Structure formats: C-alpha cells, structure tokens
Length: 172
Image (cartoon, rainbow, N blue to C red; front, side, top):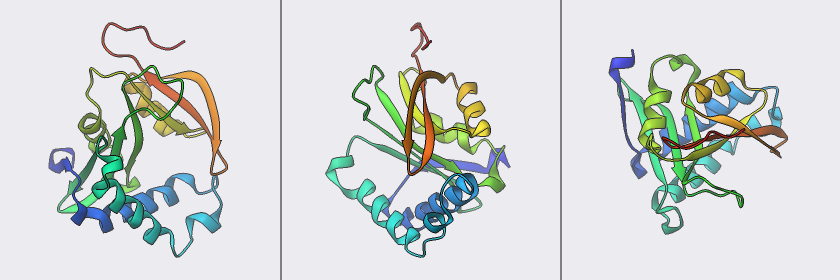
C-alpha cells in the first residue's frame, strides 16, 4: 500500500475527513488512557471540524503546516506542525498532530506525513502519550529522543521528545 499513499497539503475542503481521522485515531489510540465520555462524545466530530476549519483558515495559524495522507482517495492520516509553543523551546518547529488510522499502520503514511510538515534539517519537538510504545518507537526511529519533560493533558501523561538538527547534540 505504501506506494499508493499520497501526501499533500491540507485544504479546507478536507475538514470533514481530517476531523474524522482525528476522532477515530483518538478512539483507536487513547481508549483506556482517556475517558470514554470524551472519546465517544457525539459532539466530538463537530468540535474537531471547528478546530480544523480554524487551523486552515484563521491567520493565527498562518505559520502552521497541515498535511493529509490519502489512499485510494480517502484521507487516512493527518499532521500539523508550527512554531514552538513551549516556553523553554530551543527547537525551531513543533509537531502538534500526527495520526494515521490503525488500518494503515505500516503503510509509510506516518513517515511521509512527518516529512511533509517538518524538514529533516529542522530542530523539532513533540509531545507523545506515555505509555504509547508504538508512537514512541516511530519517533525514535525519526531521531526524536526524550528530554525528561513531562506533562498531563486531558488526563494523559505525555513526555516530550526532541530532535536536534544535523550536527547538533541530541537531548540527554
């Protein structure tokens, strides 16, 4: 399937599909880590549609980069990066979102999405759920290493992973 995955910049017309991938991915990934009440909320899709519409149209998000992965015309993955949000940031870009539907794991969509929103030469950081061994292994395979920062968001423990640019030291 990997050769038939197409990654392109997200468009406002993609919002319903992006929101669906976002919600289904959360349900697949965070079931047992987040409350079922949140994951199964009937308004969850509409809330994600509002978020993604703003992300694709509002000037506040003009520096962000949004990509979608498609297979046979269906959006199967999403990613978004932008300026660092962390106050202690020493990196140039932050990965905010990357999700691929579980049925498409191993398709190459995740790597293609990551490369579409973060240049391999950029220093970068992201937050990942802990535990989430599959995602953590994926990021480590792309040069991201934990820097010991931890936070709790939506009841989920997250660790920060940072990737140094070429020729720069990795975090401890």
